[in-house]
Image (cartoon, rainbow, N blue to C red):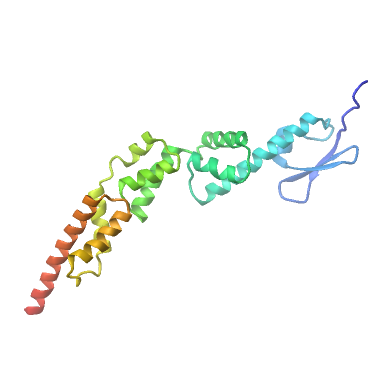
Length: 224
């Protein structure tokens, strides 16, 4: 027995919502899909509304939803590929759709792990300096490959960075005469920023010596 003919799309028009289309079949049924899904799947007036057509509409609808979610994530800040996969998965998007979206974004230059790693390090340098070890931990945790991590962190001078941070942290400590308390304050701060004990201690010791000279200068000026 022959299969009954598929209904035909009677019209495709605005659904009253931005970028959404109402598909009306000649048997009276109505369906709503986004305009991109309709265009990609070839849903237009006069086309047979087959199961294959609706399967294509569903596939493109999922891809459009994934793309819009990805663009919203990127509107806040750059993302690594691993971050993007994780965040899209949290939204219930299917793995194969996520992979298609990652490729689409990568091809468009919107996902670039090497560029992400460079930008991450530069942002940290400007606004929240920290040790090379912590930067490596952060980047590896975001799925950046070890070779890329090494490339962007290899020239970081922990000693110089720690010294600059120690000077900032020590502001207002000129009257503090207890070295142990000073080391606990400044050295502890540096350790929390990812510097090892030796680097943190040496930076604190250098700044302590600078403060000692400053205190001596204040005393001499007072005695003059």
